[in-house]
Amino acid sequence: MAGFEIQLTPAEWKARLTPAQYAVLRDEDTERPFSNSLKGESSPLLKEARNGTYHCAACDLAAYPSSTKFDSGTGWPSFWDALPGGIGTKSDNTLFTTRTEVHCSRCGGHFGHIFEDGPKPTGKRHCLNGLALTFKAA
Image (cartoon, rainbow, N blue to C red):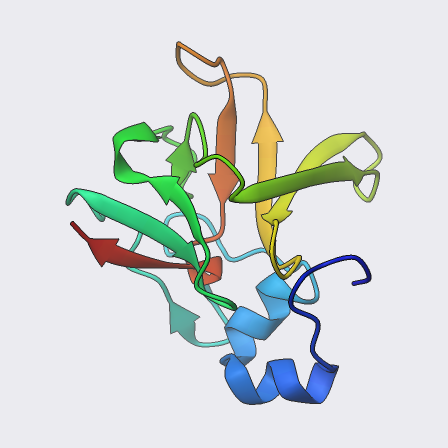
């Protein structure tokens, strides 16, 4: 992905990431809801409730504060806002509709999508793949 601070070859990303993380972050795959699993790997982040920060699993950029996480009932970790400079967006027209794709602003890793049905104050739901993120407790 051109234009990002961190750019690696597919082979370099595959050496850095697990197969499921690569599928989500580089190939824009989606883990199964509620199990947050893909390719035999799973993420515990749907149920994570501690204070801390969620980082890009590919480049470790801090992207989401735990204070904006909420239970959306969708089966994926959801947030109503990101940290300043942590994310970027682009249009995604892959499922017969236009969605807003959200990615890491430093490496371009795919996190998930943003929808307009979230809670106040933003009204946004950043619906993310747990495998795309790591968590660091405060």
